[in-house]
Image (cartoon, rainbow, N blue to C red; front, side, top):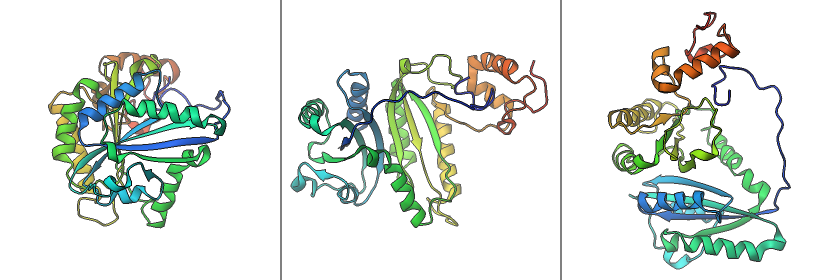
Length: 305
Protein backbone atom coordinates (compact mmCIF):
# COMPACT_ATOMS: atom_id res chain seq x y z
CA UNK A 1 0.00 0.00 0.00
CA UNK A 2 3.04 2.31 -0.18
CA UNK A 3 2.39 5.30 -2.41
CA UNK A 4 -1.34 4.71 -2.15
CA UNK A 5 -2.31 8.38 -1.69
CA UNK A 6 -3.94 7.53 1.64
CA UNK A 7 -6.56 5.37 -0.11
CA UNK A 8 -5.76 2.11 1.68
CA UNK A 9 -5.03 2.95 5.31
CA UNK A 10 -3.44 5.20 7.90
CA UNK A 11 0.05 4.50 9.25
CA UNK A 12 -0.16 4.43 13.05
CA UNK A 13 3.12 2.73 13.88
CA UNK A 14 6.47 2.37 12.12
CA UNK A 15 9.82 0.78 12.90
CA UNK A 16 12.80 2.84 11.77
CA UNK A 17 16.32 1.42 11.65
CA UNK A 18 18.92 3.80 13.09
CA UNK A 19 22.65 4.16 12.39
CA UNK A 20 25.28 6.22 14.21
CA UNK A 21 25.22 9.77 12.84
CA UNK A 22 28.42 11.29 11.40
CA UNK A 23 29.77 14.48 12.96
CA UNK A 24 30.56 16.52 9.85
CA UNK A 25 29.59 17.09 6.21
CA UNK A 26 31.68 18.20 3.25
CA UNK A 27 29.16 20.29 1.29
CA UNK A 28 29.87 21.05 -2.37
CA UNK A 29 28.26 23.00 -5.20
CA UNK A 30 29.31 23.25 -8.85
CA UNK A 31 27.73 24.74 -11.97
CA UNK A 32 27.10 23.52 -15.51
CA UNK A 33 26.16 25.54 -18.57
CA UNK A 34 24.41 22.67 -20.41
CA UNK A 35 21.93 20.00 -19.44
CA UNK A 36 23.84 17.22 -21.21
CA UNK A 37 26.99 17.32 -19.05
CA UNK A 38 24.89 17.98 -15.96
CA UNK A 39 22.61 14.96 -16.38
CA UNK A 40 25.43 12.64 -17.49
CA UNK A 41 27.40 13.45 -14.34
CA UNK A 42 24.34 12.92 -12.16
CA UNK A 43 23.67 9.54 -13.78
CA UNK A 44 27.30 8.56 -13.29
CA UNK A 45 27.16 9.47 -9.60
CA UNK A 46 23.99 7.50 -8.81
CA UNK A 47 25.33 4.45 -10.66
CA UNK A 48 28.84 4.40 -9.17
CA UNK A 49 29.98 2.46 -6.12
CA UNK A 50 32.24 5.41 -5.26
CA UNK A 51 30.02 8.43 -4.90
CA UNK A 52 28.69 11.04 -2.50
CA UNK A 53 26.21 10.43 0.32
CA UNK A 54 23.87 13.14 -0.97
CA UNK A 55 23.30 14.31 -4.55
CA UNK A 56 20.77 16.84 -5.77
CA UNK A 57 20.49 19.14 -8.77
CA UNK A 58 18.95 22.57 -9.31
CA UNK A 59 18.07 24.65 -12.34
CA UNK A 60 18.96 28.33 -12.03
CA UNK A 61 17.34 30.67 -14.58
CA UNK A 62 18.45 34.29 -15.02
CA UNK A 63 19.54 34.63 -11.38
CA UNK A 64 21.41 37.84 -10.56
CA UNK A 65 24.15 37.59 -7.91
CA UNK A 66 24.03 33.81 -7.59
CA UNK A 67 27.73 33.47 -6.76
CA UNK A 68 27.67 36.25 -4.16
CA UNK A 69 24.72 34.61 -2.43
CA UNK A 70 26.70 31.39 -2.07
CA UNK A 71 29.64 33.09 -0.38
CA UNK A 72 27.81 33.33 2.94
CA UNK A 73 27.97 29.53 3.27
CA UNK A 74 30.59 28.32 0.77
CA UNK A 75 34.13 29.30 -0.18
CA UNK A 76 35.18 29.20 -3.85
CA UNK A 77 38.14 27.03 -4.87
CA UNK A 78 39.17 29.69 -7.41
CA UNK A 79 38.04 33.09 -6.02
CA UNK A 80 39.68 35.18 -8.77
CA UNK A 81 38.09 33.44 -11.76
CA UNK A 82 34.74 32.92 -10.09
CA UNK A 83 34.49 36.65 -9.33
CA UNK A 84 34.32 37.22 -13.09
CA UNK A 85 31.49 34.72 -13.56
CA UNK A 86 28.01 36.10 -14.20
CA UNK A 87 24.78 34.14 -13.82
CA UNK A 88 22.53 36.90 -15.15
CA UNK A 89 20.64 36.05 -18.33
CA UNK A 90 21.75 32.40 -18.27
CA UNK A 91 20.18 29.03 -17.63
CA UNK A 92 22.59 27.18 -15.36
CA UNK A 93 22.51 23.79 -13.70
CA UNK A 94 23.79 23.41 -10.15
CA UNK A 95 24.94 20.07 -8.77
CA UNK A 96 24.94 19.91 -4.98
CA UNK A 97 26.77 17.07 -3.27
CA UNK A 98 27.73 16.07 0.26
CA UNK A 99 30.12 13.61 1.88
CA UNK A 100 29.54 12.63 5.50
CA UNK A 101 32.56 12.04 7.76
CA UNK A 102 34.02 12.09 11.25
CA UNK A 103 36.98 14.32 12.04
CA UNK A 104 39.44 11.44 12.33
CA UNK A 105 38.60 10.46 8.73
CA UNK A 106 39.14 13.92 7.21
CA UNK A 107 42.13 12.96 5.05
CA UNK A 108 40.43 9.91 3.56
CA UNK A 109 37.26 11.93 2.93
CA UNK A 110 39.20 14.68 1.15
CA UNK A 111 40.96 12.16 -1.08
CA UNK A 112 37.67 10.50 -2.02
CA UNK A 113 36.05 13.85 -2.69
CA UNK A 114 38.86 15.04 -4.97
CA UNK A 115 38.84 11.75 -6.87
CA UNK A 116 35.10 11.88 -7.55
CA UNK A 117 35.19 15.56 -8.52
CA UNK A 118 38.01 14.87 -11.00
CA UNK A 119 35.62 12.63 -12.97
CA UNK A 120 32.96 15.32 -13.36
CA UNK A 121 32.59 17.86 -16.18
CA UNK A 122 31.43 20.99 -14.36
CA UNK A 123 32.69 24.53 -15.04
CA UNK A 124 35.99 24.23 -13.18
CA UNK A 125 36.12 27.66 -11.55
CA UNK A 126 32.59 27.32 -10.12
CA UNK A 127 33.59 24.81 -7.43
CA UNK A 128 32.36 25.91 -3.99
CA UNK A 129 33.03 24.00 -0.76
CA UNK A 130 32.02 24.13 2.87
CA UNK A 131 32.34 21.99 5.98
CA UNK A 132 29.42 22.06 8.41
CA UNK A 133 28.12 19.89 11.21
CA UNK A 134 25.79 17.07 10.25
CA UNK A 135 22.98 18.70 12.25
CA UNK A 136 23.42 22.04 10.46
CA UNK A 137 23.36 20.29 7.09
CA UNK A 138 20.11 18.50 7.91
CA UNK A 139 18.61 21.76 9.18
CA UNK A 140 19.43 23.79 6.04
CA UNK A 141 15.86 23.73 4.71
CA UNK A 142 14.52 24.99 8.03
CA UNK A 143 16.85 27.97 7.77
CA UNK A 144 15.30 28.76 4.38
CA UNK A 145 11.87 28.55 5.99
CA UNK A 146 12.91 31.11 8.61
CA UNK A 147 14.08 33.53 5.90
CA UNK A 148 10.80 33.14 4.00
CA UNK A 149 8.78 33.70 7.16
CA UNK A 150 10.72 36.90 7.83
CA UNK A 151 9.71 38.14 4.38
CA UNK A 152 6.10 37.05 4.80
CA UNK A 153 6.48 34.48 2.00
CA UNK A 154 5.88 31.26 3.92
CA UNK A 155 2.12 31.32 4.50
CA UNK A 156 1.32 31.99 0.85
CA UNK A 157 0.06 29.70 -1.95
CA UNK A 158 2.65 27.17 -3.12
CA UNK A 159 1.50 25.90 -6.55
CA UNK A 160 4.11 23.13 -6.72
CA UNK A 161 4.49 20.85 -9.71
CA UNK A 162 6.34 17.53 -9.33
CA UNK A 163 7.13 15.43 -12.39
CA UNK A 164 8.84 12.12 -13.14
CA UNK A 165 10.57 12.30 -16.52
CA UNK A 166 12.05 9.27 -18.34
CA UNK A 167 15.82 9.46 -18.84
CA UNK A 168 15.46 9.17 -22.64
CA UNK A 169 13.27 12.30 -22.72
CA UNK A 170 15.16 14.55 -20.31
CA UNK A 171 16.91 16.60 -23.04
CA UNK A 172 13.68 17.23 -24.93
CA UNK A 173 12.05 18.25 -21.67
CA UNK A 174 14.92 20.54 -20.63
CA UNK A 175 15.19 22.20 -24.04
CA UNK A 176 11.54 23.24 -24.12
CA UNK A 177 10.79 23.86 -20.45
CA UNK A 178 14.02 25.55 -19.37
CA UNK A 179 14.68 27.12 -22.74
CA UNK A 180 11.25 28.44 -23.74
CA UNK A 181 8.49 28.03 -21.17
CA UNK A 182 10.48 29.26 -18.16
CA UNK A 183 12.57 32.28 -19.10
CA UNK A 184 12.35 34.40 -15.94
CA UNK A 185 13.83 33.89 -12.51
CA UNK A 186 11.69 31.31 -10.74
CA UNK A 187 10.05 32.29 -7.45
CA UNK A 188 11.33 29.16 -5.72
CA UNK A 189 13.80 26.33 -6.32
CA UNK A 190 13.64 23.96 -9.28
CA UNK A 191 14.99 20.55 -8.27
CA UNK A 192 16.20 17.96 -10.77
CA UNK A 193 17.89 14.64 -10.09
CA UNK A 194 17.86 11.08 -11.46
CA UNK A 195 16.52 8.04 -9.64
CA UNK A 196 17.33 4.36 -10.11
CA UNK A 197 14.12 2.37 -10.64
CA UNK A 198 15.80 -0.64 -8.98
CA UNK A 199 15.97 1.21 -5.64
CA UNK A 200 12.17 1.45 -5.43
CA UNK A 201 9.81 -1.05 -3.86
CA UNK A 202 8.24 -2.83 -6.82
CA UNK A 203 4.91 -3.15 -5.00
CA UNK A 204 4.36 0.56 -4.49
CA UNK A 205 1.17 2.04 -5.94
CA UNK A 206 3.02 5.16 -7.04
CA UNK A 207 3.03 5.50 -10.83
CA UNK A 208 6.50 5.88 -12.36
CA UNK A 209 8.00 5.99 -15.87
CA UNK A 210 8.94 2.57 -17.21
CA UNK A 211 12.65 3.24 -17.80
CA UNK A 212 15.43 2.04 -15.47
CA UNK A 213 16.40 5.66 -14.71
CA UNK A 214 13.98 8.56 -14.51
CA UNK A 215 14.28 12.16 -13.32
CA UNK A 216 12.43 13.76 -10.46
CA UNK A 217 11.79 17.43 -11.31
CA UNK A 218 10.11 19.70 -8.77
CA UNK A 219 8.99 23.27 -9.43
CA UNK A 220 8.64 24.60 -5.87
CA UNK A 221 7.23 28.07 -6.47
CA UNK A 222 5.78 30.50 -3.95
CA UNK A 223 3.12 32.89 -5.22
CA UNK A 224 3.50 36.54 -4.23
CA UNK A 225 0.35 37.87 -2.53
CA UNK A 226 -1.78 40.16 -4.74
CA UNK A 227 0.76 40.03 -7.59
CA UNK A 228 -0.48 40.05 -11.18
CA UNK A 229 3.02 39.58 -12.60
CA UNK A 230 5.04 36.45 -13.38
CA UNK A 231 5.33 35.67 -9.66
CA UNK A 232 1.55 35.76 -9.11
CA UNK A 233 -0.55 32.65 -8.48
CA UNK A 234 -2.43 32.68 -11.79
CA UNK A 235 0.75 33.18 -13.81
CA UNK A 236 2.51 30.31 -12.04
CA UNK A 237 -0.50 28.02 -12.53
CA UNK A 238 -0.55 28.97 -16.22
CA UNK A 239 3.12 28.01 -16.57
CA UNK A 240 2.49 24.72 -14.79
CA UNK A 241 -0.31 23.98 -17.25
CA UNK A 242 1.95 24.88 -20.16
CA UNK A 243 4.54 22.39 -18.94
CA UNK A 244 1.94 19.64 -18.51
CA UNK A 245 0.40 20.37 -21.92
CA UNK A 246 3.83 20.16 -23.55
CA UNK A 247 4.56 16.81 -21.88
CA UNK A 248 1.21 15.40 -23.00
CA UNK A 249 1.41 16.74 -26.55
CA UNK A 250 5.00 15.53 -27.00
CA UNK A 251 4.19 12.10 -25.52
CA UNK A 252 7.24 12.14 -23.26
CA UNK A 253 5.86 9.49 -20.92
CA UNK A 254 6.02 11.93 -18.00
CA UNK A 255 4.13 11.08 -14.82
CA UNK A 256 2.99 13.67 -12.31
CA UNK A 257 3.58 13.02 -8.63
CA UNK A 258 0.52 13.90 -6.50
CA UNK A 259 -1.63 15.10 -9.40
CA UNK A 260 -5.13 16.57 -9.16
CA UNK A 261 -8.05 15.35 -11.25
CA UNK A 262 -11.73 16.28 -11.07
CA UNK A 263 -13.05 12.79 -11.72
CA UNK A 264 -12.14 9.13 -11.85
CA UNK A 265 -11.47 9.20 -15.60
CA UNK A 266 -8.43 11.41 -15.04
CA UNK A 267 -7.11 9.01 -12.42
CA UNK A 268 -7.68 6.01 -14.68
CA UNK A 269 -5.57 7.69 -17.36
CA UNK A 270 -2.90 8.52 -14.77
CA UNK A 271 -2.59 4.94 -13.53
CA UNK A 272 -2.92 3.44 -17.01
CA UNK A 273 -2.40 -0.35 -16.95
CA UNK A 274 -1.91 -0.21 -13.16
CA UNK A 275 -5.46 1.02 -12.54
CA UNK A 276 -6.98 -2.45 -12.09
CA UNK A 277 -4.39 -3.32 -9.43
CA UNK A 278 -4.99 -0.01 -7.65
CA UNK A 279 -8.77 -0.55 -7.68
CA UNK A 280 -8.32 -4.12 -6.41
CA UNK A 281 -6.25 -2.85 -3.48
CA UNK A 282 -8.98 -0.33 -2.69
CA UNK A 283 -11.54 -3.14 -2.70
CA UNK A 284 -9.35 -5.16 -0.34
CA UNK A 285 -8.45 -2.48 2.21
CA UNK A 286 -11.28 0.09 1.99
CA UNK A 287 -14.27 -1.43 0.17
CA UNK A 288 -16.67 1.35 1.29
CA UNK A 289 -14.33 4.11 0.03
CA UNK A 290 -14.17 5.84 3.41
CA UNK A 291 -10.56 7.06 3.17
CA UNK A 292 -9.35 10.18 1.31
CA UNK A 293 -12.50 10.99 -0.72
CA UNK A 294 -11.27 14.51 -1.50
CA UNK A 295 -8.98 13.21 -4.22
CA UNK A 296 -12.05 12.12 -6.19
CA UNK A 297 -10.59 8.74 -7.04
CA UNK A 298 -13.39 6.71 -5.47
CA UNK A 299 -16.73 8.31 -4.41
CA UNK A 300 -17.27 8.00 -0.64
CA UNK A 301 -19.83 5.46 0.51
CA UNK A 302 -20.02 3.69 -2.84
CA UNK A 303 -18.98 0.07 -2.61
CA UNK A 304 -15.96 -0.72 -4.78
CA UNK A 305 -16.64 -3.37 -7.38
